[in-house]
Length: 122
Image (cartoon, rainbow, N blue to C red; front, side, top):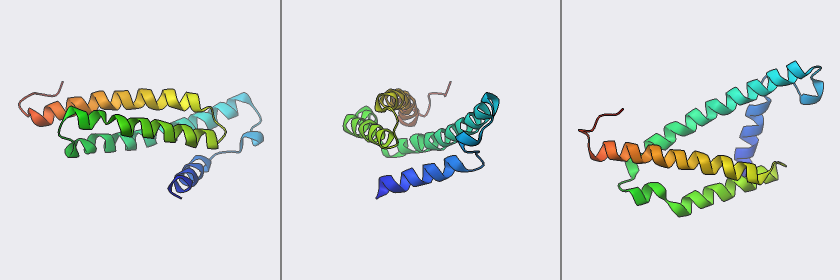
């Protein structure tokens, strides 16, 4: 149920102000629509990133940040979501693996700052 809700929300977001692909009459028009989608994706990643930063409030040590089981579960689930939409699951495994690894590094920095407030942010 939750997955379906997320997929519907994403589908609804993606179709806002977009021309259907088969209604495009040039490569430029298709590229413009892709650019609109990418801007929406970046906006969503920005919103996601704010949650990543906030979760550090609830984490107290590096093991809680790495959270290997959660990491694997998230990657597996995103691959399933991608496959259910006819996308290449391996592509999304790579995307989310990279995203999560970068988030872990960022969270480690935030945890260090939280635990050592005298250390300044670079």
